[in-house]
Amino acid sequence: MKKRLTVNDLRLAIYDLRFAPVYAFILFLAIMITGCGQTAVSESEREFAGALVNSPQPVPDFTLTSADGPVSLSDFAGKYVFLYFGYTFCPDVCPGTLSNLAAVRQELGEDGDNMQVIMISVDPERDTPEVLEKYVAHFDPTFLGITGSKEEIDAAGEPLGIFYEIHEGSAASGYLVDHTARAFLIDPEGNARVAYPHDAPRDGIVADLKWFLAQE
Image (cartoon, rainbow, N blue to C red; front, top):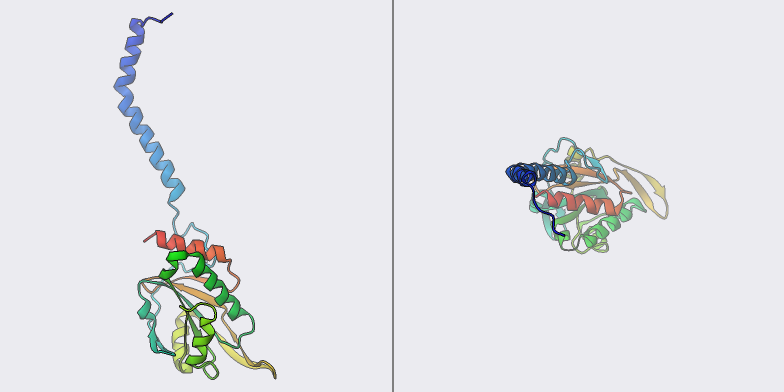
């Protein structure tokens, strides 16, 4: 049996229609506020795989030498640059870091074209540009190895707080070089953004880069 509408039912229906736009607007605001809370994560709130540089400052431009000639940091404006100071005779930290960054670039897929890895040798006596070219190509053919005089290397590393010191090794290894074991992420505008320790998790670095790319 069909229920008949009463006068009171009609009054309620008219009341609901009258205030429907208000209800819809309130619902729209609630959805927008909830959505923003879930997706908008500020840089200061996000957990990075390395140490975030809280007040990014432009890294002064420098020019060092590769096997193909002079290379400047400014040559890579528009890309995310991983700047790493090491040396080819390094027994563990350097190859581990470069292997990790090579895997990061591979996992990024097409986005990997937006990153450039540059290794600056702190051992210019043994690491000629030709030696560096062969060494970094072993990890990824796009990686660059550059070097220069001690004064030029120091000038490039000083703004980032790079430390290195030569000390004796064994007859087999030759002398060794203690050095800062961090890779610095430089953004497309030339600012230092994150300093990654040598054991930074690969998936964390990939996630960081994807986050930075999404902010553009």
